[in-house]
Length: 273
Figure 1 (tube, one colour):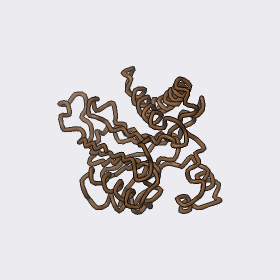
Figure 2: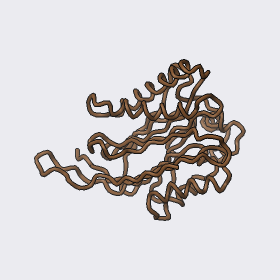
Figure 3: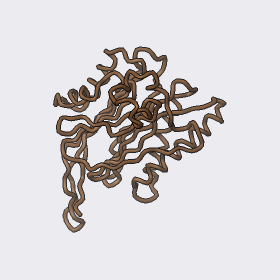
Figure 4: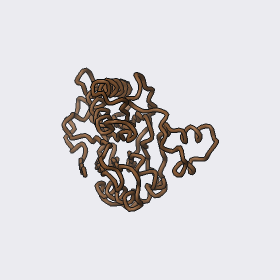
């Protein structure tokens, strides 16, 4: 079976927003320091504002997931994602005890790209969108009371944004000793876009509007900038964070007997506010 090396460009932005006193979101983008066969990890975590030290919880979640996935003990694999979330969960739980902070929690939505496969690990109500053929598809399910109502077909997905229980999480990282993340796998195609975002973004921007921003064919850093600006212009009540990913090419990897692959593997842009 042929293997592929993805040519990817990405960008990320996180903003405190117009209402909150501090930014409890954290994002992660690869820095190009790892070899191509290690894969690429992107993440958004939204610390829970109703609990103490939400910023600490989101930063710990991203840190522990990254450390577990790329710990140098063998090649990273999708199972490492689940272990990473479990490690993050326990680390946050113990940090809350150590700090005497009561309960600490965060959402965590991460995309791990290995060759032409996308692995999504997800807890909470941040979201991952796939934009393909100019259409946006949400790849994650909200772990909220309103999300549960959608899954039981008591309300339709279009009612979630304005539902009174949209922000009541039923699952998060760090609140309890154990967590069961959602893990899914998807085959990538050339010209796919992925958008990871906190609920401060998607709560005020419709799915089709996310696709419209991507379909403007602007540079990847403008994609994240435009989505954040749109959320701020609409007076979102939360922190806003976006990670934008563009799969420019999927190049067949050379066999070991051929000349080593020397093309630039991915282009990296990172913006933090």
